[in-house]
Image 1 (tube, helix red, strand yellow):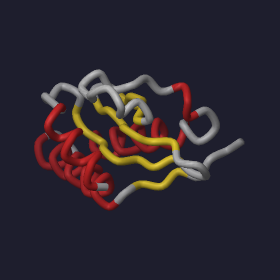
Image 2 (cartoon, helix red, strand yellow):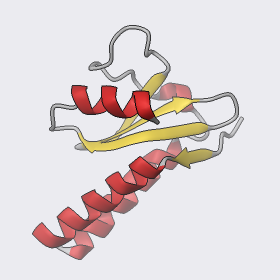
Image 3 (cartoon, helix red, strand yellow):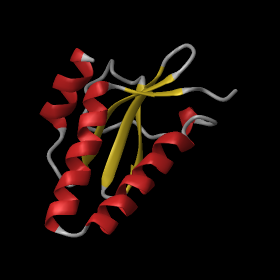
Length: 107
């Protein structure tokens, strides 16, 4: 089964922030490359969403969240009954525990 992939508003903001930071601090072409890679990783989960690993920062009981990578970026998502929902897109070099817990409980 192919799942539709939905990106939450907060994840869209994550993408915009990542793109803008790279474009301003490196180059717009690099920002485009990163955005394309993240988008490809995010949409690759449509066919096999179970392949993603569980984020180690999440406590027990939040096992329905998974992640895929476009290093160093992490795409964190949940498989719903009829779709895959992307909740967070973040730089994996950051300490993400508080961000993940806050974002995954509000979306």
